[in-house]
Amino acid sequence: MEHASKPALLDAGSAGIAAAARLLQEGSLVAIPTETVYGLAARADRDESVAAIYRAKGRPSFNPLIVHVADPAAARELAVFDVRASLLADTFWPGALTMVLPLRNGAPIAAAVTAGLPTLAVRCPAHPVMQAVIAKAGIPLAAPSANRSGAVSPTEAGHVVQSLGANVDAVIDGGACAAGLESTIIALRSDGTWQLLRPGPIAKARIADVLGQPSVPVMSHEIEAPGQLASHYAPGKPVRLNVAQADEDEFHIGFGSVGGDATLSASGDLPEAAARLYALLHAGAAAPQPRIAVAPIPDEDVGAAINDRLRRAAA
Ligand code: AMP
Ligand code: MG
Image (cartoon, rainbow, N blue to C red; front, side, top):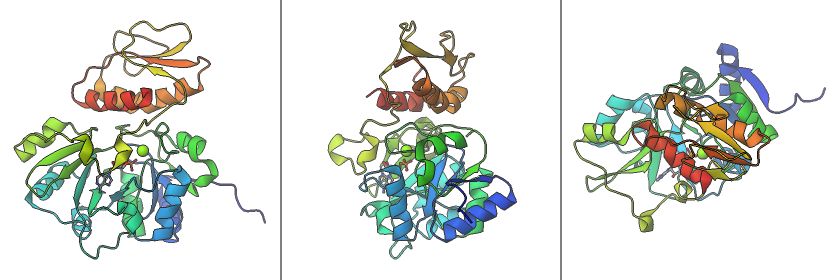
């Protein structure tokens, strides 16, 4: 008999979750919905599986991956937690916060996951499907966004299939992602300071409140993970930002009072805009117009993360 065509589409119920867990244990790649975006997951303890992630995405291997675990206890087996890390885990996990912490000696993490860094990026996701798959598989999962490197991130199962096709073994269809933007990444430094490496759904100010101190800016000469710098989230055509009045050859993405061809949020709601951002960038990529224009987005709360992604999409 012929093999079923790839990727296999799995349902988000117990049968799909069990099938996904089995595939992951065998070393395969499975795209899984999370509350941020769809992740391209592989077991984090095996070199070949992690190498398959980089291959499927066409991702440069110096760009390290986030490891997803079931709970803080599982994270502590992989990374060294200090008081601050414990406090942040208590406050924001499960959820859209990734912490960069010292890698624990002897932790069962493939070297390719950290790209040789002495630190590990770790997160405990809130999405019930991702939670269930991690629990069932019983292994920490390395999972970057489930798209070709540099392209727009997926917030629906269809986006994953479009971007990765047969490069991924299976996709769990769990509907649209609630937050719609990648996790906030912070690094806790050994000198007691902390840095925001990537803005995301959890605003910097909320983290500063918990830690009782503001973040220290990242200087360009101390970039450890170059993935955050380059052009990224690129829809494959020119993107123009802060546009209230679009030109005729532009697919106009609106916000609030700026209507556009499609809107991120007619009521000007930032979380709604974040959840819809990538779907509209995908729509803009597929639209007949050769260019994309985006309405101004306020730079507050999750708006800062939306603008961060838009600047990279336009770069
Ligand atoms: P993605 O997997 O696409 O969500 O991107 C993960 C990002 O996390 C990378 O591009 C890095 O910028 C960041 N990252 C992962 N591990 C580390 C680490 N050990 N140190 C600093 N940044 C990291
Ligand atoms: Mg990504």
